[in-house]
Image 1 (tube, rainbow, N blue to C red):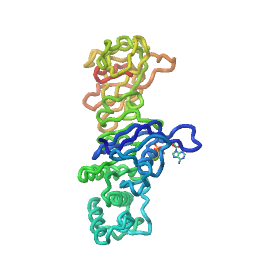
Image 2: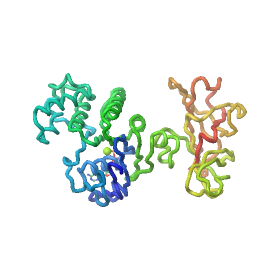
Image 3: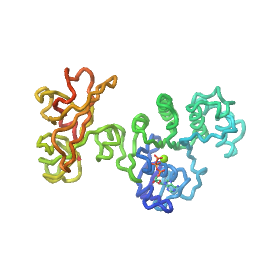
Image 4: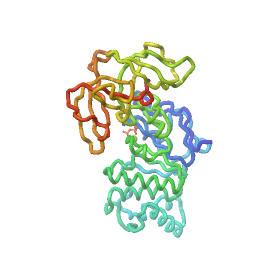
Length: 373
Ligand SMILES: Nc1ncnc2c1ncn2[C@@H]1O[C@H](COP(=O)(O)OP(=O)(O)OP(=O)(O)O)[C@@H](O)[C@H]1O
Ligand SMILES: [Mg+2]
C-alpha cells in the first residue's frame, strides 16, 4: 500500500474560474523522494497544502496508510514542513527555533535538548545554536528550517521551493545536503520546485504538473528519455520540434517502434514512435530531437545517419564545454510561418572545421534519438 494516496482530488478556490488541482490521482510510496515539478500556477503548492492540511479538498479523498486524513488538523498529521521563505521565528535562537515543534508537543526538556542537538548535527549547524536567524546566511537559515522539520521525526517532510532564495552555488550545495539527509534518514520527502535540474538531482520520481493535473509521473531518466507528450518533452531539457506528416506509422497492434515522417520541405526521416494512440497515415505529428543528439555536417555523406534535415547556420556560440549552434530549417512549416530555429549542442571535438554563419548545413540524428507525438 502507498503511504499517501490522492484519489480524484479537486481544489477550487472561491472566485477562481478553474480548478487549482484538477482530478489529482497520486500515490506516494514510503521512503521515496517525490518532486512536484511544473510551471508557475500549475497547482504544486496547493497539492502540498492539501497534504499538510492547510487547505481542504473541494472533492476527493486523501489517505495516509489507507486511512482518510481530511478531518485531521495539520499538527496531527506528523509531517514536517519547509517553505520557500525560511519562516523562522526571528526573536528565537537557532536552538529554540528547532525545539519549537517539540515544545508544542509537550516533550520533556531533557529529551528536547538531546533531539535538538541531534537535528542540528544532521544539518551541520551544531556550533551555531545560540545565533538568531538574522545572524545566519540564507543557506544556514534554510538548514535551520530543515532541522526544525526533521526534529520530531516525521514520516513525511514537505518542502515548497526551499532553495529558491539561494544563489546557484549554495542551492547546489543544499541539494546535495538534502539528498544525503534523505538517504540517511529514510524519511519520505515531497519536494516542490519549478527548476527541472533541481528535480532531476533530487528525485526518485517526478510528477510533472500542468494546469492542476499531472502530465507524467516517472523517474527523472524516464521523463527525459521517454516523455509522454510535448509538454513534458519541452519542460525537461531543451527540445527541437517540427510539425511533420506521418508517412509510415507503426504496424497495427504495436505501441513502439520506428516510423517515417515527412517535413513540409519534403525531406523524409525515420523516428521512434512511442504512443498508445493510433496515428493514421498522413496525420500531422510533432518530430522532437534533443540538441545533444543532433549531428552537424556540411555534406549529408559526412553524417553517421541517413536522417538529414537541411538548414542554414544562423549562429555559433562557444559555451565553454560545448558549442551551441543555431540553425533555421529549410522550407516552411504547414501553417505558413517561417521554419523554426533548431539548436544543436556540439562537443568541441566533433564540430566540423570552417563553419560559417549563413552557410547551408545538414542536421542529422539517429532514428532512435528522435521521437514523434
Ligand atoms: N488562496 C488562493 N486563492 C485563490 N486562488 C489561489 C489561491 N492559491 C492559489 N491559487 C490559484 O491556484 C492556482 C495554483 O496555484 P499554486 O500556488 O498551487 O501554484 P504553484 O504551482 O505552486 O505555482 P508557483 O510555482 O508560482 O508557486 C493558481 O492559478 C493560483 O492563482
Ligand atoms: Mg508554489
